[in-house]
Image (cartoon, rainbow, N blue to C red; front, side):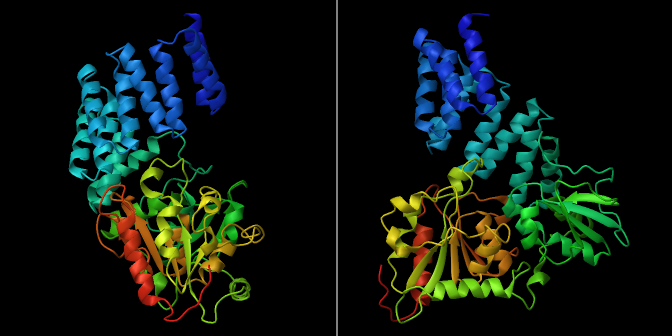
Length: 471
């Protein structure tokens, strides 16, 4: 092995460990000594892609291909970068050539299918996933992806079995218990441990299954991080919340929240929407009346016009590390039309990722900032929940805030990309998951103006008719 190969290998080890700066130093060290090292350019392109520097990564892959035209990995990776840049036809050309050069190339099949799925051509994307399975019949991610797309289409009989392949992906969480997984057995006088398997938004949405299990006679234990206990203890059907870090008691069964949805569908033929949780009450999660009143007074005690404005919370950015973030998060500036509506007060609900955009925004002065102590004392999202209960509406992309607002019963306008997450299905402006939520869908890939204008029109129709609000 040459010295350059050893340096690249060291760089890749840094890369895999998340030490991107050290990895880049290694890659550029090789390129400084050997500018025509195609492998070093590909390694650099992967690093740039991981940093979301898609133009730079595409340029690195092109340089590698000018040096070595027969390079299916570089072609596949270039296609993936072009996909993230929305250059669908160019990306397709790359995947075609990658498969010409290496006909059984698994990653090219995956990425080609994903390209067309996210472009809105679902059937074309499914075709390439299925072609990949012809060559790799036991490929976990292809089966999982097929499951997600069938669930998105509302085809649950195919979707759920295919989606179960996700459990073969390394890193999926299971609790440390000898109890068997619940497969739909009777739960009368039985104990079952349930837990989230994905992000906080998923946990908020699917914690509703505790109530379904309780109705079937189970004693329901919830395993959760301690900081979420204050919010989750309000969910119906939970007998006991177990700290994630503590030993578990004996239970008869265990299941993730989403597994419960799957298993209930297998036994009933229906999705457990939990619509009864909204009967006679706003939602299935709540916080104390005292906390709601505290934030009511905080909002009321600020300088404002004589007529109380329509209070609208805004949230625009999810976790940038999520594989679909580029399709579902939006720049804050996209919401500018909402700030121009008299009688509407925008409340910032963006914390962490993306919040830096507020200081750079052209309409920064039109957005009310919440104090820094939000959610620092009572537990994760408890203050946010109380604030949401005091708002007239929430406008948000597909983030945990959307699920929290829906679970609380706050009127919500959820901005969805052309191909949304499976739970929102492919069409419709309403969802059985949350009665207070309206789905506002993107009709053209990458274009958010139409859905934002639709929401702005609704706000103009519901705002106070007379206002001297100052920005």
